[in-house]
Length: 179
Image (tube, rainbow, N blue to C red):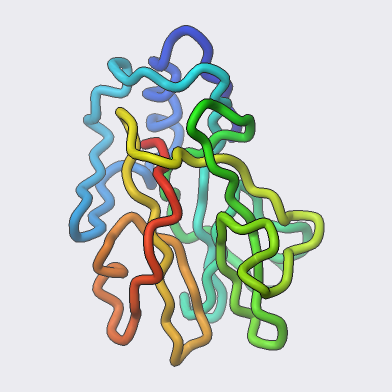
């Protein structure tokens, strides 16, 4: 679902109504509740919000975050996991781009602020994902990247504790996404 927010951020409340996986998620240090007063949020001028989802494959050991699931991936066993929040498909003041990348031969997908994917491969056709805030602003929370090396699996999360996954390490904050 893609929603453009103009003068009123009350539309964000509608996003939350139509995206129940945003509500009632617990990421350790962030409790997300659909009871958030989204109508009081002031979105940056020019922000066009799109749902930012995490997908999984192979019983959740492989993860991929994006606003879309690439064509035919569902046929390969990829499924919707959760909605992490919302990112902008258009630039706004203080925004940083977010890119889809992968490590060749490992089916290890990850996101990066680096258009060159930290020296790894760009996901062709789906490389550019959108924009996230470079610093925390009202209505945003940190988006973290974690690494579960023993499973060759990076993943995005809202929890600095990597959702309590045994053996996962925190790569750092990618930026800030809207709830």
